[in-house]
Image (cartoon, rainbow, N blue to C red; front, side):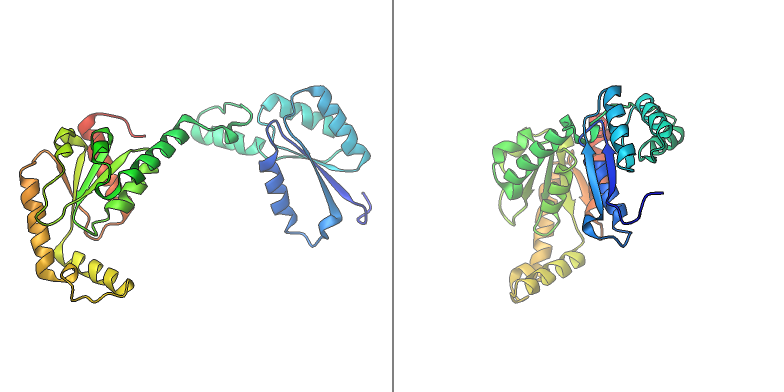
Length: 280
């Protein structure tokens, strides 16, 4: 047993950057009443060769240290474990048992490819592009983007067009939203958009009245304005319904009392059914 007063050395071995293992070790160390300088973490990233394992295990033996591993290849984990056992070096495999249990649970063998956590995938770039597109196309801006959008949302004020658009964009969909304003025509570019991409958001009058009045109070405005009056809201709702009657191929979604996630699920379910495309 090593002297408790000695500096304790932990060798963190990884076939990638070692960041994941370091965070886990540091999180574990917080559970012990130790001085900050009581442990020395030595990160060994991008391990590729067995000879490097000999050096690491030898250093750990001389330092009376601990080896912590996040090697993802099963063969390399076994080799490192064997070398540690042969030299009496304590060894912790942070990922092996997890991969094994998950493989049995999922009935799929792991890929055992190092560094996948830090790989930027095509889906990441698609989401970033979708978010940029959606921000540019918010609230009727850039009507020329309507034909490029995966989804177009329509609705009168406070039907959650913007938050719903951003939520869908984070899933990789390019979204444009268009406000329906009393007595104003729809943008002509909307006629070029395939109807299966267009979704009109409706809400019950009483629910909208409450939302708008709460909004006016938050921004310290009187609820006496037409924006927060039931008669005006009814005019807006009837105007929107008249517009939608002339476009029966558009999908209407009632957002009354729904969370953004629920509405998004309704939109995507309808979109993929109508287009015959797989979910992102």
